[in-house]
Structures are given as structure tokens and as C-alpha cells.
Image 1 (cartoon, rainbow, N blue to C red):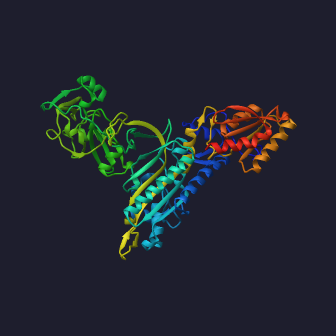
Image 2 (cartoon, rainbow, N blue to C red):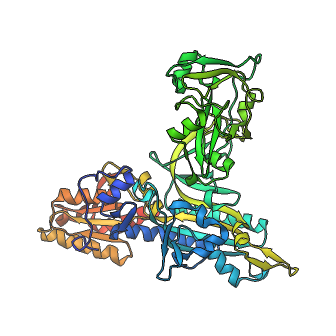
Image 3 (cartoon, one colour):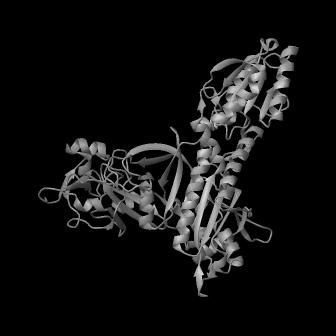
Length: 571
């Protein structure tokens, strides 16, 4: 491709709305453009990378025994209502009506649609197992689209669905998909961790997420170097050691605490440690208000509370100031488990049962209780773990110290069990002629997310540094001065030579200053640059690898062999 013919609207300034390196560089390199918040157009260079990633995904999925197909992005509401997810999925679903007032949605995922297809077509165990996938556009009305392609309302995704006759088959399909994903992300050049994830609205039992590591990643993960434990912060089990579980049980006492509301203020006022307190937090959970109690030195894991209360994430929010006053009879900051004004459900982290003589709000403005004990002064619904894990906690598997990292989810795998075949009554006949439900798996790769994740790991202050496997082009031949006939002649010759060998190459034949050409080459991140300059007449050109930016002078007749050698030795 000749750059004089290319649509590549690069930007010199960093767009003000961009936060992540990938977002900034995709915009600056002329690879994407924002249409509206959370919706992007892929320009030629960016779309070439998308196609490279899709092809890697396609090759590994095909090699795993999965078959590609394509289902509609427009889905009828009836199928979602059969499984109960029409209401559960919440406001992230784009909903619409046709001219006959029939309800539809723009597909955020495709479990119902694939299951409906299979229940109508597959009738015997002899047709199993099945693994089917598609690469399709998905739609989710994100509350706060952000971080460029990381959190969009429209995105490209590979989703696969496996159908098996029993649990063992489902688990085997899960492992096959796991290995295929490792190959996909290895080929994309990503550094990643596989961590336990939460099934969320997908349902089912086991799930894992593939997290591409990044300094500014939106997901926090914890992992143990001494064993194989790794999980998202939301999923991780928190090992919390109670420090105030010994000593004599004292009698409850009310204490005047004027304007002392936060844990920090209470620690100073009572001259003690944060673990001596218990926080009482009030939440609106769908149609009810609930109280949740956790140790004062830790943070609530809202996802764990959702599971305890049995609501979806979008149905949980902190209670507003007016609600707090109604429930507690006090200003915000003095809530406690004793004497709440309404009969509401109280959820208690299990470790609080062991704590002695704790300090809690008194549900009276400017007052707290001290020497409060569970089972004597208050009770509640015990939940094993409601706490958000943090770095330095003990590993729940081996007891070593957990470490923390950040990254972006680029893939996930779910064991769905019979959740969707139950909901849609999808059955087949087994070896004995008995009707059985399909055991299913759901497995996704964020194609557009992977594009951004690669840039998060491969960039510097000057631009992108693509791994060869997903680079939009392999080589850029830059003619420094297009008015110099010899430079043009050599540049054209090298360009044709590389093209004839099947190497993806672009020729910078623009009538631009050399500095502009070099900056653009670094910005778009093509792995190798051949610079045809003043020594072209002597048969000498400059070779630069984008990864290292090391320059070397080589002979023009060595260019092809050197490029081939370099390409053979890197991703």
C-alpha cells in the first residue's frame, strides 16, 4: 500500500477525552474515530489489526474442533423471557420494537439464541458433543462508557457455545477452550493471567477470566506465587484474621461522639484500631433496604452482597441520605445494628461472630455503642465472606501472601451446566431413549478489547510497537526525499521486492518532511522500517526495528533476507 493513497488521519495532539495509552494511540494513529460515546468506527489501519486478531481466533477455534457460524444480532424478547434474563439483564440491554410492537433486543450475548437453535435441531446424544462459535458485534448500554475500546456500547466479540450430554463432557470442553485461549493470547503476544471469575448474569458454576496485564487496567486481580491461586478482586475469597476475639465480654455502653462519623475519626476518638469497629452500611437492594455489617478495617465486596441478597449488580445501590434517616433515625455516619427503626434484613460477615466488644453506631446522631457483641446485643443473617480482598492477605488455598496486579479482561470461559437448557427446555434423547438436558459452556474473546490490550503492553512515548502477529503491516519503506530520483527508484524497487515475497509492506511516498514521516512510522508502530535516504545511490539504506529503535546501515540487496530473518525470529 502506498501511503500517498492511504486514509490515515494521524493526530499530533493527544485527544482530551482519552485516558488509557491504547485509547490515545488508537485515536492519534488514525485507527479509530468516535461516533458517539462508547461507539467507534474502525479506520483502515485499525481494521487490519482487528482482522488479524479475528484470524488468529478463527484458526485456533477451528483447530479446537469448534465450527464457525453467524447468528443475528437482533434477538426476540420471547427467548430471553423464557430464561428469565429479560428483566435480570437490566438497563445495559438495548431494547426495541418492530412496527408490529414485537419486542427485540440488540444482542449483548447469545446463549438463548444458540440454545434455541440447538433445541430445534439436535435430538440425539449421537449428535453430541457440539462446539459452535461466531465472531459478531455485541451491544451493551454501558452506564459509563470509558477507556476507548475497553468499555464500549458496541464491541466485537468471539462467543462460543458447547453442548454436551453430561458434566464430564462439559468440563472436558471447558479445558479444550482454555487451551485454545492460551494459544490465541500467546499468538497475540499478550502477557496474561488466568484467574477465577464471577459468573454474574451468565449463571452457571465455574468461570475463569483471561486478564491481559496492564498498569492502568480496569480489573484488579490477586494471585499467589506459591500455588496456582488467582482470582479477580470481586471473586477472591478473603482470609480475614480477627484480632479482637479474646478477653472478657463487657457490657454495652453508649458513648457521646459529637461529629465523629468516619472510621478515621472514630479511631482517633476512641484511641484504638480500626479492627475494633464494625461498619453498618445500608443498601437498596431491588425493592428492599438491607443492612450489611463488616469489620471496620475492611471494605465491602458489593458483588458478594449481591449474591447474598440474590439481586443483580444493577439492582444494588447505596441508600440515600433520606433513607438512612428513616431506617436509623439518625444522620449519616451513626448507623448500627441495634435498634434500627424498620424491620430490615441484616447481613453479617461471619468473622464478626468472633469479635469481642466491638464499637458500632447507636442509630442516634452523635452517639455510638461500645462493648457490643454478636448474639448478645444483635443478630443477623450470617454470610461466610462479605469482604473485598486486598494485597497482603493470606492465600485462601495455601496460606501464603497474596499479590496484586491490574489488567483488562480479554477472554472468559463459563461452565453453564443446564441453566439455559432448563430455561428453554432444550432436551435430547440419551443412550436409553431418556430425555436429558444439554450441559453447556459459554466462552468469549473480546476481539476489539484484545486490540486495545495489545497496545497497553506494546507502546512507548512515541507510539505503538505492534507484535508482528497483529501488526497492520510488517514493513514500512520510507523515501526520505521524493524529489531525489535515485531514492524513489530504490524505494520503489524494495517495495515491489517485498510485495512479491508476500510481505505486508507500505511505501511512504508522500511529499512530506522526513521528520513527519519518521514520527508517523513510530506512531503507527510497523515493526520494521527501511529508510531510503542520501546513501541510496551507493546501495545503502537504514534498517530500524520499532521494538528497539536500533538503527543499522545495510546494503539494499540484503534488505529482503534481513527482513525475512527478523520476521522468523519474533512474534
